[in-house]
Image 1 (spheres, rainbow, N blue to C red):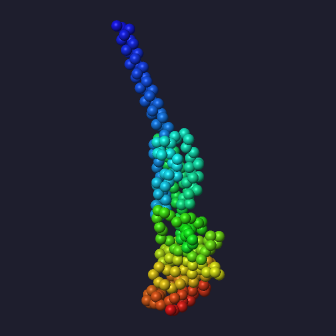
Image 2: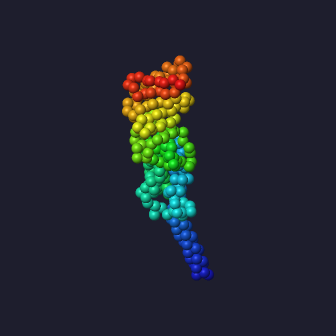
Image 3: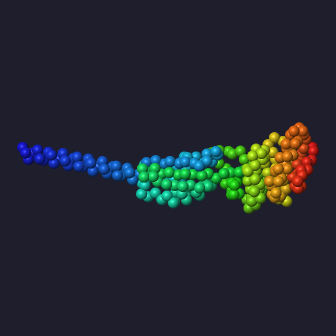
Length: 239
């Protein structure tokens, strides 16, 4: 009888031991898998890329995050993959202790849309980037430029961005064959002859003074051309 009880006790011990080992093995195995993916964006004022698109770049071949082993994740490779995306300026990828794969993403900032075939955006550095399938941005339209000569118009666009009045009014820039620039504003149909991209701040100040005076006089709509190429003055041609 005693021997039988001992055998039963041993069997129970073995069963409990197997259960503990199995549970420990399952927990250890689950801890080796990703638990979640967390994506954050530094600036969401213009959503050019979605969280789902970033997730797809991070987890390319697996059907789900549960199939990804933490031990084989190459954070540098993932950062390189994200940073190679044309909508991303910079990405930091990290893995937390609790198995969360995180990515902090800074998007590139389009400052104009270039009329071409196909059309494309340019960012603050004058770098070409494709149009977004997610969101259409309200930025000035640029025409008459080539991909290898975007620096002059990029300089003017950045000056526009830095000026609250100009960024509110300028909707288009056209580069002529002689490289002079013509701008158009949102409400009126006159052209602004900016000329070469030099002394931009002074030209903007001259235009703003002209604009305020003619708005006050209610004569701004009478003009077809506003020439800013002269120093310290504006030459305006009436319709």
